[in-house]
Length: 202
Image 1: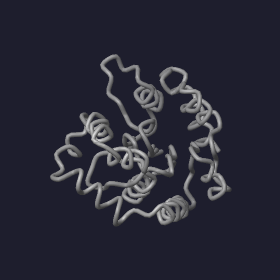
Image 2: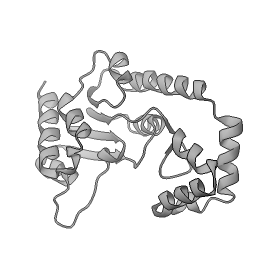
Image 3: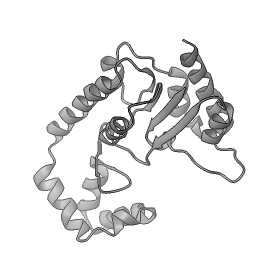
């Protein structure tokens, strides 16, 4: 079976030297299955939808849903929330906070006239109501892409369950995320393995 894991940073594979990251533990457990991780740091729903649309041949999709306030920046390796963009443009101190955030993302920092481009985006392109409509439209698009597929969803905002009403949601993994126990690699890997095994056998 081919399994694809999509979403924010929790869906990102990490190659730790000791092999102890939960993504490595999950892969090591499922020796009879192929598992691919397509997580991105600070991912928007649109980025998740785009990744799923590129990878249509998985038997099981695990979706870590994300904050509806993330904005998709397709030219960069991470996305930003509306609050982060507003704070960055609010003052020189806000801009310095933003520059500190992007130190590990050289593709963002290398953008010419970055501050002016973000200001243009906020003032001319962005609209809060349209962004909300875009988020909900992308949930329906994701539902269409996952039709007739086995899925495991990990909710974030609660909007997802109303749209994916007949899909399986893992309250176990969502609970670990809520209580920040995703940092416990062994605990988190066992929960993810258990949920995958349950759906694979169903």
